[in-house]
Image 1 (cartoon, rainbow, N blue to C red):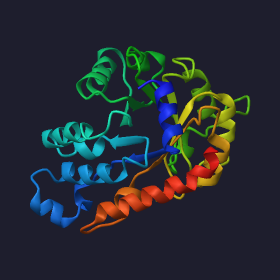
Image 2: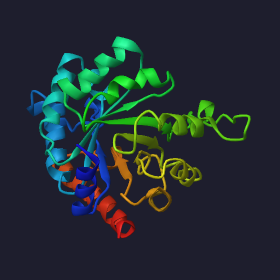
Image 3: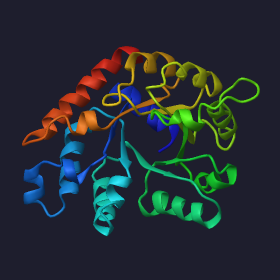
Image 4: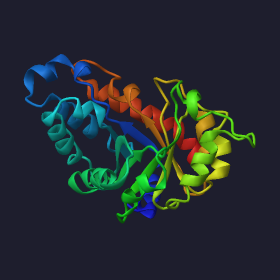
Amino acid sequence: MNKSTLVSNIKEKQSVVCVGLDTDIKRIPKFIIENYNDPILEFNRRIINATKSHCVAYKFNIAFYEEQGSAGWESLENSLQLVPDNIFTIADAKRGDIGNTSNLYARTFFETYNFDSITVSPYMGQDSLEPFYGYDDKWVIILGLTSNVGSQDFQMLQLQDGRHLYEEVIKRSAEFGNADNTMFVVGATKTDFIKRIRDIVPDHFFLMPGIGSQGGDLESSMTNGLNHDFGLLINSSRSIIYAGDGPGFELKAEEACINLRTSIIPFLN
């Protein structure tokens, strides 16, 4: 999906909501487990059908699928086929390696599974990301400043000029591609730094996890993160897909998705 299509979809839907399909087999309702051969697929089918009118992206956290072995990869492939063509898809795989390994990761997620984008770690440098840039209308989503507590360990290290390591990583890695094929993961819990990152990369999209269960601040994220092309995908995973836990759970998920979108709309106008 190219940038103009993504921006057009955001405009049309008045939404920057990304639903995270972190589908944990241990949290799928019991009646789904008992009645379906592929409970992950059925859970995702119900969530997608309930939320597809209110979101512009789905993020599949690959760990929840590969943990199930070959059956999990099949669930992933079949779930991906349920996503409408006009909704952006993210393989949250956090890959990053050199040489043929990155080539194969790129082929896996952009050819075999046909995702629109993949999350990657930039810490092995430019050559580890180059293979992901060899595809038209595909996006590389680089870990910039993440929402977890451990981001303090390395990303916030101070350089000799007073800047933090994450700032240099974002500045340098923005040069690997451009604003039409590169996004950055920017945690919504990092409210004090969102504006600083927007100043470094004014034209790029941010994928922002951390709203909901992790306690990220939506108002600050929207105010400091929006740009002339909207420039944000606000991800919520557990707070949406596990909003309900019994029969009708998908209706609770839809309600949670609508509530998030409703909170976002005033910032888009």
